[in-house]
Length: 267
Image (cartoon, rainbow, N blue to C red; front, side):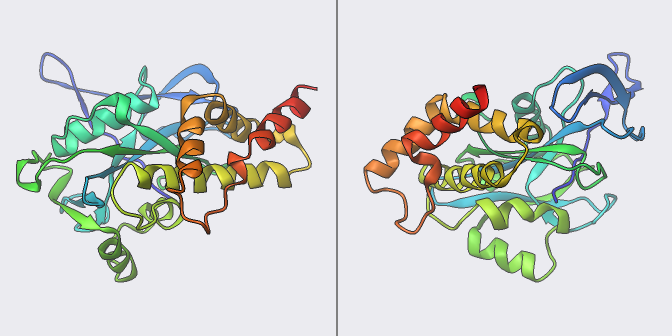
């Protein structure tokens, strides 16, 4: 699973401040507690991290190479890091792209198309991991890299990334979302819709296969936000227009499927 990574905070006086992150319970409810980086979490405590896939109009993805002093030195990855105290997931995604790559993302263009939860928080997965997709068309030579984090960055096609993963050039724990939800389906925003439908379909399958909906609160919250928000309608219209691949599983786009699920849950 994907990892998290945090940047150091600098006090106005020049000293390094300890990094703090908010602690959540399994239902992703803020506990009111905060902890410093490196503090072990107790069972049932989680933090949130983000992984940020930035695509351009040519269907390529912006990847970066880890600095020599980092764990997995010289390996490639998408940008990402931990959600700091007081931030939400979207703010963290925008901040990480700006700090590490010098890319200024438009928050409104971000799409949260995957969210994972691990019951065993670790360096690779701090609990909740939100995977964001953005559109940006900045030339690689215009990037401003954070040298202590990134030694190199470039745009890569999906097939190139697959070859890098197969050859071991990618950080191992950064590849799951790519394999699962980032198909080689051409320029955004169609890539966003396809990846999002695939992910939501996987979430729906987990919920429908469960005998205990009370244990599916996180998954149900994801589906509720999708179905009753604007993104479901956007994907539904893309399907109506024949823009989605014919072999794409799309039960989540059936008008009654998720509605009936929430009706049963409310009842």
